[in-house]
Image (tube, rainbow over all chains, first blue to last red; front, side, top):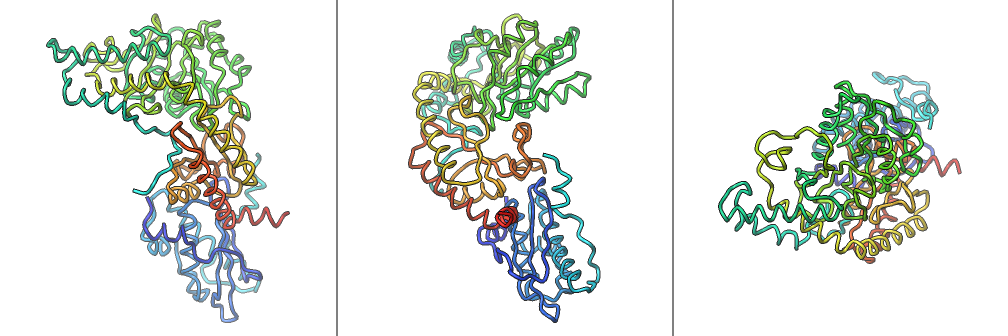
Length: 145
Length: 392
């Protein structure tokens, strides 16, 4: 079902974990759909991403896209990181099954959410960056179990 | 291929070697069409008759009440659609439950589009259909009650005897999807007032592509396939003779060894449940502790997602299944787990292990040990677990 690259990033995910004092954190997705991604960014004074970590609740593709997305943005400037699209993540993984394409979208959103958090904290604007759509906590409150 | 620990017997079973052996001559030697007149064909005809008798005996039915089909889904479709059609002058209301197999649920939905009304009765939080609610759902125009004998995901055994009695009392047709129960738990159709029953060969070590529908004599039902006179002209088409022979053999074996197999499975099942609940925190057992198929285990592991779990188990050679959305191709997790009231994220983290008597304690120990490591690894990656731990 999955490409070798997806399986590799799933079984040996890169950059799993948390950062102690992150410059930005982004969490997207919701438990209802079965995918939540959280990305931590450590960004230096030259707006370069020094380090990046992730935590993901989700399927094999969700874990692999998170892992690949962190690999792709690490070492890049904020501006360059904005160019890491879901398509780029998918291509880097040699493709995803059609039902899993939304996982790569989530990875892109998670990066953007973390960048948004960083921009807000530092009072800067990043070209092309919009306020993240989904926040799991908002959705959780709406949910009645 | 690496060594496999097969714990997905509710999905399908390994065909028993004795079954394969019984089937083989009907491909190579006795290949005649049972409808033909020459002697070669009489061997095929005899084999079909014997298999039919075998199944009828197991159910306490008559052999002319057994109709071979291509499997359980076909039998469900036939029973529901064609009985609904035959009884539509009496009424157009059908009662089923929210935890049925999709072969029943989607068939009922298809009938709704044709103007039938369907009541989907709730189950309790253990996954047992609510008898009181079922009783209340009965109307003057109710023509059919269809409730599964045992649930395929969480293994709950339904109060079929009570439902059968209720249906009989009200003069309503009663169908049960017994795909998971037949050959695994003992029952007779008369004791349970069952009018129609679906079963499948490959869930009891028989071949795939063969099953049957039991139709009580006197029940009105339209033919499923028009053509020749096979299956009393109700399901035309040349018989799947090797499949029918294999099914007969599998049924014979299952019923001969039922007591013995059940005892072994229950022991392994309870050992597995015990170890997992003791050794893996934030885990719940889905379904009922007692009214449960002897080989079914279904857990929810909080903070993790089922597909990831399945892939990691597969890497260790363990075959299992999950009610996670990602295994179904939709965004919603199992309708059964949602029907018993599990929140979505708990339903996503479910794992079904279904045993056979061939599994060993050693395999179960390896599975639990492996599972512990995987659950721990996935939780260490889970933002839900992180939040939970930080909240304290």
